Amino acid sequence: MRARDQASKKVCGEPPPEMELEVQGQENELGGYLTIVLTWEDAMRGAPWEYLGKCEEALTEYENR
Image 1 (cartoon, one colour):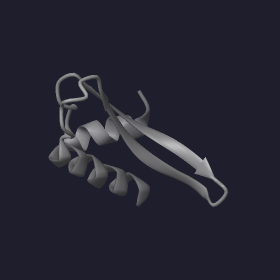
Image 2 (cartoon, one colour):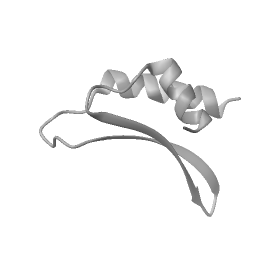
Image 3 (cartoon, rainbow, N blue to C red):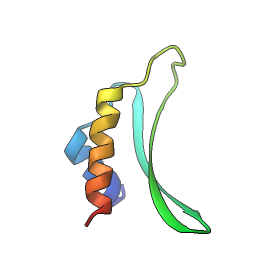
Image 4 (tube, rainbow, N blue to C red):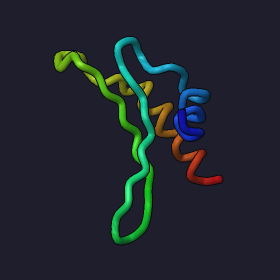
């Protein structure tokens, strides 16, 4: 597991049941950036916005180091 994934899980906790969390690096012509990816199989299940908010905070903290 990558350090940024571990940092996100440390701050926001394990993802909800049956969901997987990953932080992915993306590149474009302006440089690199990170995205939070939370995946799950059940299309009827809504997004866990509180959990995603915590993950966003963790990602921001990681980027500001």
